[in-house]
Image 1 (cartoon, rainbow, N blue to C red):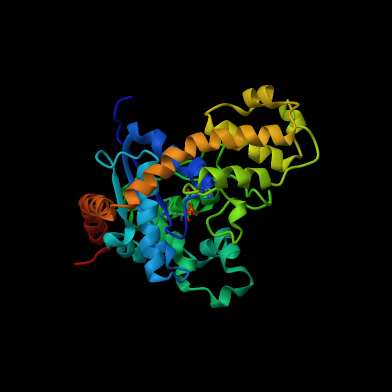
Image 2: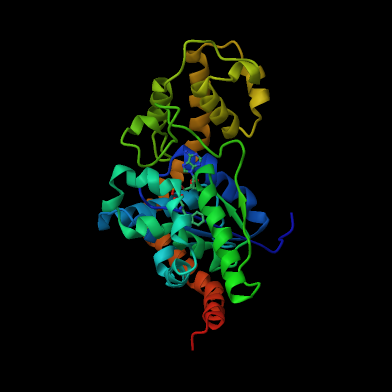
Length: 334
Ligand code: AMP
Ligand code: TRP
């Protein structure tokens, strides 16, 4: 494939270990589209502090997340990997977008409602306005494509609204209207313990997720303990309906091997849960172990990771600074 002029941007928060949900929902796509354009991937550390983070843990999570992204195959010689806080253009543009986005738009954000729960009065203001900063992350590079999991769809719609309103208010055609890239399959990997919840780094139960740094033994154990149901594995999509645990585990099995659910159903239809879970654990170990070995190797030389991030910060500023300069000129700043 030849390089096109797509500018691809995405981010992940350093708030815990990378999960199989991050890998299948986001990182796998980040990897796949590397030949389609210029990729700019950010460790969203300024987003992370919308909820208090212990400084030492934040630093370690930033390095480990970077290691995870590198280990899952992102070529940092061709593309940019950097920590958001290293480039002040994000927070500067984020402020301008605070003045573009409307209260009503942010009031509709479901992630804020989920994260703040019943206690929204005690949430940080940053947690509320964070989708504006997310829009700034993307638009500071005039990115055109944003690969994410399903849960980010609403934030990306807000980014389109902000770009449109800015362009309209100032009578310019400056910020692009971005295209989300969300895989229909894999966009939402669910918890291994509760198929109503997404698999998440921040779930209090470690058994609810597979971490990319889990040992082989732990991966096998977690799949064995995963919630299932009382039937044999189905052999058609029709039989899969109304079986959320089976749907989730079968999707994971299919995605890990780049197979379709239909072809997997032919292979596993009629098996008992024990046999299927063994197969699932085998393919998961085969895919995740090399990534986890590479993360461990990289974490032994944190200097190498810091060099990659520092280089990324410099390259990111080179792209975003002229866009911020032009934004200020459009707004009417001297
Ligand atoms: P986060 O871990 O919330 O910073 O998310 C980082 C990226 O991973 C975003 O693109 C999310 O949409 C994606 N992601 C997180 N959890 C899942 C999941 N359970 N299934 C699919 N994608 C996910
Ligand atoms: N908010 C995203 C999440 O919680 C992470 C993120 C930050 C992001 N900035 C971004 C995703 C820009 C896409 C584009 O998962």
